[in-house]
Amino acid sequence: MDVDIVFSGGGVKGFALIGAYQALEEKGMTPKRIAGTSAGSLIAALIAAGYTSDEMIAMIDELDLRKLLDVRKLAVSFPLMKWVFLYWKMGLYKGKMLEEWLERALAAKGVRTFADLPKDRLHIVASDVTNGRILVLPADLPQYGIDPNTFSVAKAVRMSTSIPYFFEPVKIETPQGACVVVDGGVLSNFPLFLFDDEKQMKKRPVLGIQLSAKLEERPKKNIRNAIELYEALFNAMKEAHDARYISRRHEKNIVFIPIRHVLSTEFAMTTDVRDKLIVYGKQKTEQFLKKWTY
Image (tube, one colour):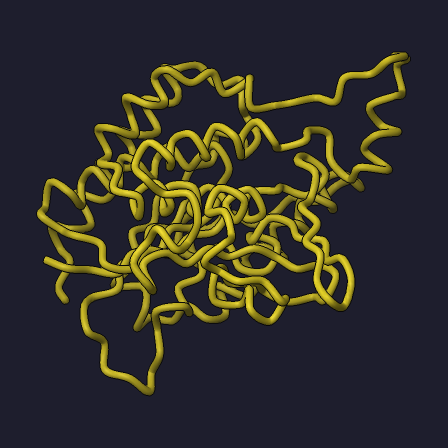
């Protein structure tokens, strides 16, 4: 059965998305359009390029996540230097290693730019913080004076996965000046709206995979200090837009995969934890599909 799929963000929790996709494959579902934010954009790009879930698992078996954390090399080092770089570069890690790894993975399937994918196949969400707007790639690129056919898919994913202050933001040059682009989750962590046009009849079912619990089942934040306040503010930014959009009408088409004991930036996780995330994502999706009607 043909479906459209939307993947949420969630950092390294995104391994659960591979398990979710594995369950969909085994059910005989074929994605025609795929959208994603942050980690979801990476999984969406791999699927759009033709990767199966088994191929993705084999690929990450050979990947050391810690190697994706590319710290800037310093000619002179002192204890506070990384915080100086954080101030000026706006991120602890460059993010270039992630982009280069994905470039190689996509190139192995013959995908480099959006011209190498069928039209309307892949939709990636990033956040243009210079202009305060959701940036949908490749659809919005012409508004920035950029030809989508020449734009790197790996670069688009890097933009969507640039967790603020963790990875350096991406700057794109436009006729109006440079724009700073960060993680799509800042403005829309679960872009279900991309495939939900109430004015048009749906050609196929739209299925969402979200790395969190239903809104009414999410635990309340316990805010006792400034750090916890910052975390709560950031989570509110990620969730508020999408939570307001998702209604009972949408919930029946969303697989909720709540993951509470893994940090989004836990790049040092063990292979055991990673494998458990994949299995958990598959199990939750299998449970959902047993009851899903479309």
